[in-house]
Length: 287
Image: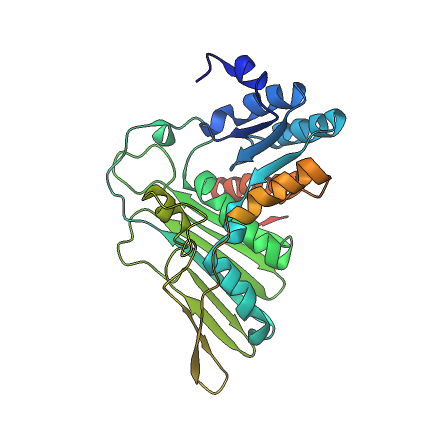
């Protein structure tokens, strides 16, 4: 244990910022200013100006800066990547991340400080995944609301990203007991549907080690439906969170690229800011 951040910075080369969202910027800024490499949990920062300042500071100090968009290495998302070539031109992409948590919980995540809410919690992962697959959308529209009794933060959103005729629809709710498909992709050659959430986080909370032989194995497979209506099972890829930190090590030791470019995380924050504006104004906005 250390008494303060300064004491920690004297003893390490890499700082992982996994503190409450509102503290990300200040801790990361101090670490970078001290010449340390930094991994920041999502959301990257509270504002785009903060993101720009950290990116500029990282470049001036010659440090490595990356953001923990670990859901790029989820079993279900890796399986989506595997199945997509079979679907032809995608016209509808749907992703849902649902929970059933009607009761409010103690802690900073329920405090409306401008950095909390489900769009800032789960939205960064879902938006990052879409940007990885399709790039930036042309425009977006969003609905955001607090549905739980007494909630002071958003606990539901539906974000529609417009790509010409294609739509990417992202949805989260804390009041769904019977979960919707985690992913559903529909193209001119068929559809792919996958239920169930990647098991890695739950396994670690249960005491599993990432190097265990069965770590990351997803027991729920996806289903591919072809144009003739016939279906086939698509075996789930193995989740690989270790790949993120192996890439961090390669970046620090060998000068390789960081696993998540901070510019990618900045783009996610830009989408979130526009989504909140869209919800406030009740209109579709250009990206």
